[in-house]
Amino acid sequence: MNRDLELDRLANPVLERVRAAGAAILRIYAGEFAVQDKADASPLTEADMAAHRILVEGLSGLEPRLPVLSEESAEVPWSRRGQWRRHWLVDPLDGTREFVKRNGEFTVNVALIDGTEPVLGCVYAPALEALYIAWRGGGAWRIEPDGTRLALSTQRPAPRPLRVAASRSHLDPRTQALLDRMGECERHGMGSSLKFCRIAEGRADVYPRFGPTSEWDTAAAQCVLEQAGGAVLTTAGQPLRYRRGESIINPDFIALGDPALPWRDWLGEPE
Image (cartoon, rainbow, N blue to C red; front, side, top):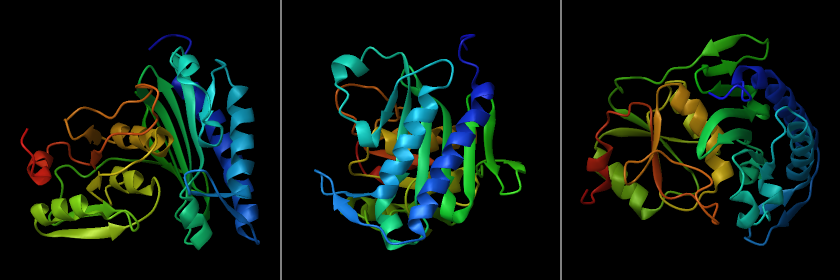
């Protein structure tokens, strides 16, 4: 670890900014709000932008001063992003559809990317009062509303039947086929980055994702899961990485609480 990147000292300032973003989201969540459609047809609300402004301003002021890439300001060209050694990666409101449905399963995601790896991650579900933070070498933690910190660890070996965190709105044929190959399993529908965090807590075991996600959707929660003992792997068996090129779209991946699970067998594809 380079001396200018002291992750333990960054943790509390990140928590403060994420809590502030969550409070702004809840103020809007409590009332009426308009919903717009972005260019990709995904929803956008006033809460997305309020959290975005708080996080970009707050993270930009931390030392060392690093660039911030947010979902709501993603037009930074690769010619510039490609020169970054480190940066903050932010989804101000992950799960806007869940926000609009008012089911509480939306999160604020903040990750610090060092090279191509998420080395600090914070995930906050303000409506559920669920707050998670992790950093490389510092473990993974859930922070209770009273400030108590609970150390997280995935369940290894994984229990049977396996508990699968499957998206309610993204259960495509490939995911269904994987579930069929797994045999007996319990499916737990949940939204946003909470799928990774539930695995980190030992409350779920597997999250397969075949279909588009963006880097800011996964980086923070991946750090939480990895520091709790789990893994997020591409279908080629490599850890999911960031700042890979011009596209911010992730490849297909599978998140595991127990990396020793026979996940390749579930893919039904030649190695």
